[in-house]
Image (cartoon, rainbow, N blue to C red):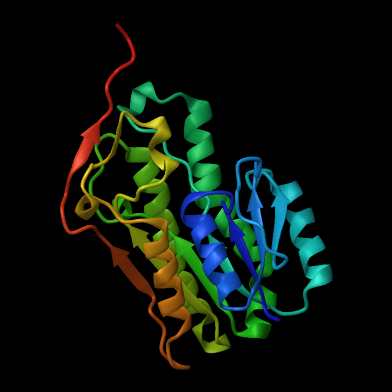
Length: 236
């Protein structure tokens, strides 16, 4: 059984991708800070508590997984965090968290696994964001981190394609998850105004089902309608 590693696997897009990979007969190592609220169990879904922004801990966890698994075939860099508002109003701790989670950790994790993925001629799937492609006036740091991840993916594909590694970037638009808990807005109320984690997981399945030699390097998933709901303030 081939193995996969998925970050941010405790909820949302990451959990749906993990479920889909288990369904496709992969052993999935899910990394997240907290699995206390997860309601999915499977013998082929191994939960690993890990703060991926701590590079020394991340390296230890990867070494542990590699000691168990000789064929790691998929790495999904999904974990992400976003804080939104005027740039000067987002404190430095949050800015560091955005960059460390969305850009630094995927780059380091890829470095730790790249030789293994060259051997298996496997996949690196980076979950970026539609904001990597558009101007984001209330999410400058977040969109910059995602644009960096997308550019890293493009460059890495050119670097490793001769070795058989498939590097793919998925750019989801507004997705119905708990990602917007830190924002004063969320997805629209009607179903046509958002995508779901399942939509992204289905895209991963499509990526894996391509004929050998064909790589879908860039996928953008968008809802049919553009609609954002502003949250009501709790301040009276």
